[in-house]
View 1 (spheres, rainbow, N blue to C red):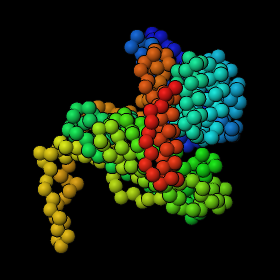
View 2 (view 1 turned 180 degrees about the horizontal axis):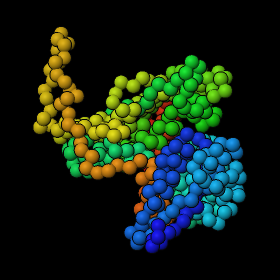
View 3 (view 1 turned 90 degrees about the vertical axis):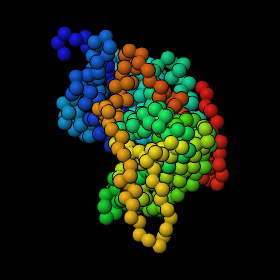
View 4 (view 1 turned 180 degrees about the vertical axis):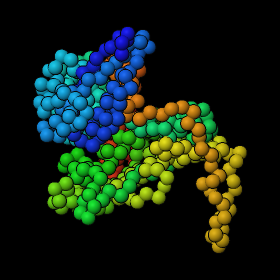
Length: 386
């Protein structure tokens, strides 16, 4: 980087021994940013992230650091936060441990970027937002699905008026998570224990809040049905355990403008769709189906006229009647793209709307979804304020 002004930013990365913290945030985001030469600011300054790895397992931390040529790692969070070179605290721990880490970071005067959910309940999430605001630190919450190519294309269609008046959104998310007996489970066992902060509603409704609101509009009510379809699983040590958290949720959300969204989330379903998550949006002028990467559309001008006749086999190729939305851009890893925005936010006051209040709104929808499932009724979603 000869001739360029470099701005080094130390980042305390807590939870990098976990799946998300390691793969998406360390390897595919921070290390990828370093491999590309940092983040270039408008004035030519290059922001250079310096990760400080933190976790509870010394052997795993040492192995990760060795594999990636990193020297700065520790099991002592307090010591990492005391490092004057550390400007940002990042948290990818299990949800039940997140609040303690964030509070320590606020007290240390660090800017904070965290995985979602921010906290296990909306009251605590708002408390963290107020603490951070009082301390004057910059904060952000991971909202990665907004950066998926398929959803970026969908947002482009909405902003361009393709749909006319949006009528409905139907989402399908999930896959079969093996029970852990005859095949190893691809998700950690704590996900299925409510006492450890597990459950698909607390996990996925946080996502659906920002996806629905950023693309279509505010969520005004929720009605949910939760289920624990698989009552017993086997943990990482080969021990059977009772599943106390929901592994599937079926939600109906009312949005501004009369839009009705239905989203099914399940870790007990087998995939018969093109991608692990898909949203179909229907409007007066056209429809779209968006997944992780692809987005296909059908305008009203080319919409066929199906006729119901159960006595004859279907002869139409319904999927073939849709058109692909072109990329028209290069799409980077969504986690990396949001990391770059947060680094610009910290160093150069770049825009970053996904703060702790946005994170609290996600927790609120999850909390209300659980309450709706328990009480068997529709619940209004009230605006949150600090």
